[in-house]
Image (cartoon, rainbow, N blue to C red; front, side, top):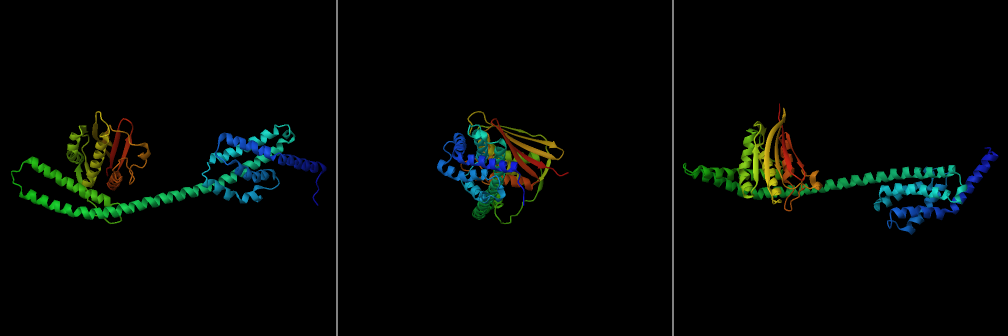
Length: 385
């Protein structure tokens, strides 16, 4: 038989007396807690429903002989977390609520009625506040993590669905467009063969541009097909002078530059040999230049477009395309090279995604920097030693 000393008996008796006092003034303490909650989050909570649910929690705080792990309240924590998560309850509210419980208890012991209650008991009750908080937040965090993973899976599934649709559209478009293009290509060859040897160089250069643009269309189709599940024929890599590659694309967009009254500059720095998919890389540069011209259309003042090229290290060559148009919106900067991301009203959002894919295939990358003054795209080539 366990022996309890007289001092321990009276101490236990006193503790129960103090707990009885706290139970008797339950409404006063709970109302003090709710007052603080309502002051910080006015109108956010249903007073009657919240106060009714709070009574069980208050009883838990005073059941100091029952550990939280074996207390009936412990079993309903998961359900409470699910309810609050559905209501999108911020974690800050939950943590602040516990701080307000501490304030309410300390406020009561400052009252003449509560001054008789020893701080040792109040400290024990406060410890229960924080033990409950730890377990509650652990469950709540787990639910938040599961919800985040579910949302990420949903977004991924939607993204894959859109890519699948785009792939089917691309395959259909390729079939419909390639047939007339093949006919055009055939007739271009016939025209060139039938032209007199005395045909002017100017007319011949026009035909060169038409044929070049024709090839670009073919590569655009191939780029769109890259988002489908079908196998496509890859363009072989060839060796080409970097300046030749740049100038060939500039020649094709020169009419737009002149028509839009753009001040254009090309600083041909290091002219090096690149082993790349020529037409595909031309497509990347053409896409970036045309996007730059589109951006410049949004400003009325002095329009400037600049191309520079340089070796930034022993094995890295960079082509920089800079325009003084508007800044790329902050909302799409992190996802600019992902499919379907665009700031254009009529854009597909696939152009830069294809550019990224092409540069990756050619041992390179494409990046950008944008601010209120200018936007620069960088075509980066990692040269093989």
